[in-house]
Image (cartoon, rainbow, N blue to C red):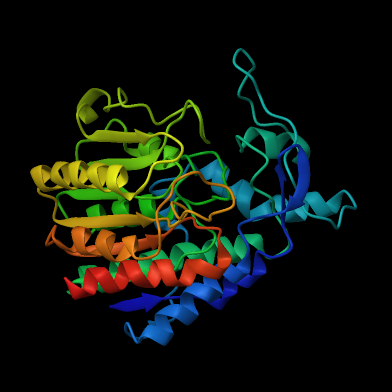
Length: 342
């Protein structure tokens, strides 16, 4: 399996987040991607390729133009006010407030975000652009005949809505990839999100569409971030009714219950009969993840990869979360190895 990776992710470094009532260094850190790259290379899972440039047109097929423009100019607007420290949103509109984009950067940060987990620094936009190029190069490989590929994206993407950043996510790499497959003529795409946190952005983007099935296995929204989406009764709307499936699980879930949810999700994918599968690969389901509450262990990821392989579909893995840095490489490599071994 070919892996796509860009060292430009390092531009998104030194960023912070609001966690547990304090501003702290972000759990989503550059070491994550480097540990994964080293593990993939060390296991001999296949060549590691640099991404090709794709520009912003594929991003604009999924994201709103004013939001993409904001991402590209935010750091310049922030520093124009004399600030040389990380930009973090601290104001948000509440229900009943008007959704008019403010002129000032502090207002814009709140207008285009839903939490204080998306910080911007000088190199953030270049890293975001590189991350989506990684995903789109993965699309190129699979659409070109590769049976599978791994897009080692950083920053991740599945929390990003069409016009909103949140949860470490700025551009929704998996959604952009799915749309790119559709634009290349792929009739039906399935997105299988196995990250611990619900892929609220991905669900929202495709919620009224029948050409992209979205299945999420995640922490229950009554207990876990992002809290306000991810319930079982969210099944799609309009043309998309029946094409969104959520499998929320309670804190403390171990592999037996989690794998049962995976089996059900895979059967939904099989019934849909997609032409390609995009896997939002998060390994924050791991038992020692610092911001998650499931109990999976490293050998379990071999089984996860094997079950996904039994879908027998062209598959693009797109990297999402996982914050136990010392174990992240092992868990991702196990998933890919399990997939390849099947």
